[in-house]
Length: 538
Ligand code: FAD
Ligand code: NAP
Image (cartoon, rainbow, N blue to C red; front, side, top):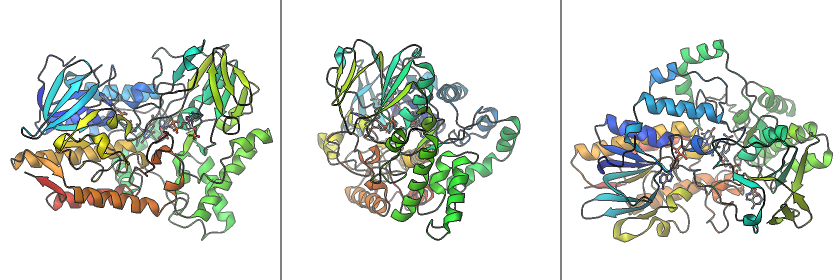
C-alpha cells in the first residue's frame, strides 16, 4: 500500500527499505512508535532489489546472511544453496515484509532529497522528490553503504549505438546476451560474479580490467535436506558463534600466526580453505595475522597467485590476472567466485589491460583504449559504488545551525560509534561509516545497530527527553580510535572503496571500524550502561 495519504507526522521516519530499514520498522513498531519507511525503489530489498545482474549472490553464507531476530522465521525459511542467488534473497526479504506486515508503512518510489532539523521543535522534516514532506522526532538513515552506483562518465557514452547497463541498476526483465559482443568494465565482486555467466551466453566477451583483485572460490553447493536439518537444529549455537567472531561470520579460524608454522602446514591450511566446503572468506581466517603482517599476507597472496597460474592456461593472461604486489590480499574487498579464473580459458573471452592502455572513449560501435578499438553490442559497467558516504551525502541533510552533513564530512565521514553525528541530533545511521558494517556480515551488524538505536530512542522517550545528540568530543575520540585501529592493520594500504580510492577526489579515509564485531558490541554496551556516555539527552 502506498502510504502517501497516511500520517506524515511520526515518531520515527526511516529512509530505505533494505534489510536495515525493514528491521528498523519492525523494531520501532514493537517499541510502540509510529514509523514510516521511505524508499526510492519500487519494492523492498535494497541491494537485492537493485543488483539483479547474472550471477549476483551473497558471499556470506545464507544461513548467516539472514535475520536472526525471530526464531520462527529462521525455522520456516529454507535456503536452497550455501550462497543464495539474488532472486532467492529478494524472495526472502519479501517474505519478511509479508510475514511482519511491513508494507503498509512503506512508501515506495519516493526519494528523500532533503532532511532539516528544527532546533526549536527538536524534530526532523524530510522532503521528497515528489514534493511531500514528513516530520518526525527521530530520523533513521537506513540508506545503505553500497546503494549509490558510480555512474559511468566515459567520454562518448551517449553516442554508443548498443545498450549499456550498470550492475546496480539491472533491468528486471534481464538482458539477453546471446549472439552479442559484450564488454564488461570492472573486475571487483560484481564483475567477478557476472563474467562467468555472461561468457556462457555471449558470442564474445571482452573483460576490461584495470586492477587485478584477489578472488577465491565460493565452493558453493546446494544445501541438502540433511544439511538444512542439522543447521536448523543448531541455529542458536551457530548464531552465538557468529556473534563472537570478528566479522560476525560462522567460520573456523586458526588462532596462529602464518609465520609460526612450517611451510607445509601453511600450504595445507590454505589448500584446505581453497578447496574445502564453504571456501570463500574462510581464507581470510586461515591464520590470525594475514591482514596485519606483511610477510603473512605475502604468503597467502603467493598462494592465490599460484592457483591462478595453475588454472589459467595462457601464461600471459594468467600473469595479467595475478594481483600485483602493491595490493595486499584482502585489503580490497576479497572477491568470492564460481569459476571466475576458469572463464579465461574459454575461446570466446578476451582480457584487456586498461591500466596499461586506458579507456579513452566509448564510440558508437564500441570502445577505444589508447591501444585498440573494440567493437561491442552491449557494455556492462561493474564499476562499483560511492560507498559508505554516497547515499547520505546525496541527501541535503541540515543539522544544528543549518550546517550540512556534506560540509561536516568534506574531509571524510565523522561519526560517534558509526551511529550518530555531532550537530545532527535525533538522527541515526544504520551500519554506516565508523562501524564494523561492510567488514562484517552486514545483516548481523544491522540487527545490532537497530536494536541499540531503538533502545536509545525508547530510553529517551521513557525519560521524557526530546533531544538526543552526540557530543563533538566523543565523536572526535571515536574517529581517532577508528583510524588508530585501522592503522594497526594492512587495510588502509589497499586502494579500495574502503578508503574511497575508487571515486576521484573523495577524501582518503579508512571508513569502516576494523576492531571487530565483539569488541564493537562491548563498546556499544558500555556506552549504554554508562547512561549513553558521549550523548546529551535533554
Ligand atoms: P541497502 O540494501 O543498500 O538499502 C538501502 C535502501 O535505501 C535502497 O533500497 C535505496 O534505494 C534506499 N535509499 C537510499 N537513499 C535513499 C533516499 N535518499 N531516499 C529513499 N530511499 C533511499 N553484505 C554482506 O554482508 N554479505 C554479502 O554477501 C553481501 N553481498 C552483496 C552483494 C552486492 C551485489 C552488493 C552491492 C552488496 C552486498 N553486501 C553484502 C552489502 C549489502 O549492501 C548489505 O549486506 C545489505 O544488503 C545492506 O542493507 P541496507 O538495508 O543497509 O542497505
Ligand atoms: P568494486 O569492487 O568497486 O569494483 C569496481 C571495478 O570497476 C574495479 O575493478 C575497478 O577498477 C573498476 N573500475 C571502476 N571505474 C573504472 C574505470 N573508469 N575504468 C576501468 N575500470 C574501472 O565494485 P563492485 O564489484 O560492484 O563491488 C562493490 C562491493 O559490493 C564489493 O566490494 C562487495 O562489498 C559488494 N558486492 C558483493 C558481492 C558478493 O559477492 N556478494 C557482489 C557484488 C558486490 P579499480 O580496482 O582499478 O578501481
